Length: 237
Image (tube, rainbow, N blue to C red; front, side, top):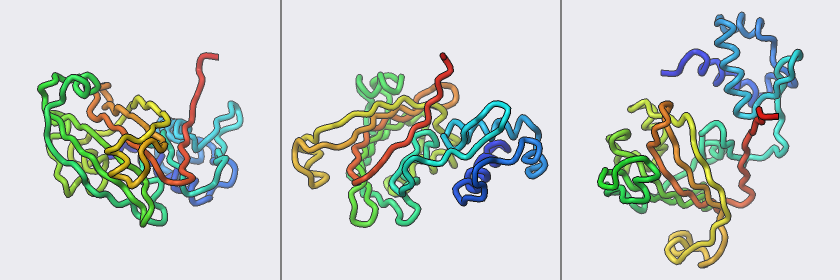
């Protein structure tokens, strides 16, 4: 169940995307009246939107809408953890499951997920498409002690939405590594691409609020004109 500040943040985000606010948000006082909540709740909600890059904060002046540099459909916001849902405004992302199995973590995955190599994990590999467009090839490993139940049918949809609803598991922090990757023979065969051709790769470790990792994934992206947006704040200078 979402906390009140999260509900307010989601509602404000919807209004921003619907262009109900042109340049600037109402004052904190007016937002408190509109949502019938405390100042702390409003500030927490605004911090969420600021950290997602939807707002700019100018001291003494308030919060302003942060209009994107590129106004196109193929933008994934790395901060909101929506993943490919950001690309589903017009057409759904469909999955084809290539591998669904329970395996021992092994040394490498065990070290990523901070578990014993003999502990069990779900291993999932799937291709994701939007209509006839190849979007991504994704390989994921989920700790079974944190995510105790998955099925192939569930993995055809949003895994993150399922584990949030049923196990209250959400990503609070994540380590993300981005690189240009050249396809090996297996990846080329699965995607219909040439061996050695390039794909944008993101490796990611998602952690819960207690900093406990529960998921490691490696995703190769192929969608033309795909962009990733990240909002960065520097508090050191």
